[in-house]
Image (cartoon, rainbow, N blue to C red; front, side, top):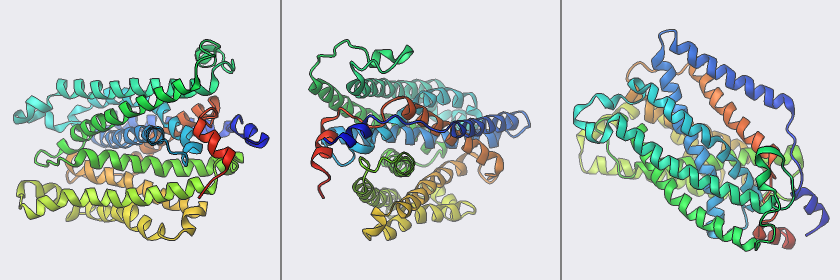
Length: 411
C-alpha cells in the first residue's frame, strides 16, 4: 500500500464550524416550529409532520447500517471505501428510540386505530409500544456492538481517543488476532440483517399500514425496508460525493465506487416498483373492494394523486431512464442529481402512505411541516458530521479495503 494511501486512510476530517452552527439552527427551527404548532391549536399538523419524519429517518438510519452489513456478509470489496460513511448513519439511531416514545405522546393523532375496539387485541397502545421497543431495542444493541468492533478494529492500541471513547483505542487486547474482529463483524452483520427485516417490518405495519383500518399487505414490510435501503443508498451517494470533493478523498473513493453504487440504485429502483405493483396486483385481480379505499385515496384524489405519480417518476422513471448509460454512473454531478431526485421521491412516498389515513381531507404540508422536516434533516446530518469528525472516515484495518487499494480497482 502506497504512502499516499496510508496518509489518506488515516486522514482526519475537520468539518467547518459554520456548517455545525447552520445545522444546529436547522434543528432549533424544527423544534420551535413543532412546539409552536402544539401550543397554537394545530396539533394535527405538528404530529403528522413528526410521524412522517420519524418513519422516514428511522428507515434511512438503519438502512445505512444494513448497507455496511451487506458488505461484510457478502465479503464484497467494491463498497469498502464508503462503508464507514454508511456506518455513520448509526449515530442517529439513539434518537430513533427517543422519537419512538415521543410518538406515543401524540397517539391520538399518530395512532388513530387505538380507538377501534375490534383491533384492540393487536393494536392496543401497550402492545404496540412493547413490540416496537423490543424489536428496535434488540436491533440497536446489535448495531452498537457492530460499531464497537468496527471502530475497535481500526483504533486498538493507538490511544487515539481520550475521555468517554478511550476504551476504543486502549491497549487492552492489542495482540488479538485481527481476523477475530472480522468474524465477529460478519456474525453481527447477519444478526442485524435478520433483526432489521423484523423490526422495520413491524414498524411499517404499526405506523403506516395499520393507519388505514382495511388495508392489509403481507409485502408491506419488505416494501418499506427495501425503500429505506434505497433512500439510504441515495443519501450515501450524495454524502460520499460531497466528502470526496471537499476533503480530496479521490484516491480511496474512486469513480468505481460511484459506478457500482449507481448500478445498485438502478436495481433497487426496479425492485421498488416490483414490490409496489405486487401489492396492487392481488387487490385488482382478486377483486377485494375493502382494500381499494386505500389505493383509491392515493390514485384518484388530489393532492395525493399528483404526489403518487411524482413519487413513481422520481423513484423509478428518472433513475431507470438516466442510469442506463454508463456516463451518468461515473459523472458525479449527474449521479448526485439522480440520487437526490430518488431520495426526494422516497420522502414524498411517505407522505402518500401516511397522510391520507391520518389527516383525511384536511391535507396540509406547508412551511411549518417543511421546517419540522428540515429539523430532522439537520439533526441527522449533525450526527453524521460529529461521527465522521471524531472517528476514522475509512475502515483502515479492514483487510478487504487494504487488499483492494494495494492491487488497485479492477473492473
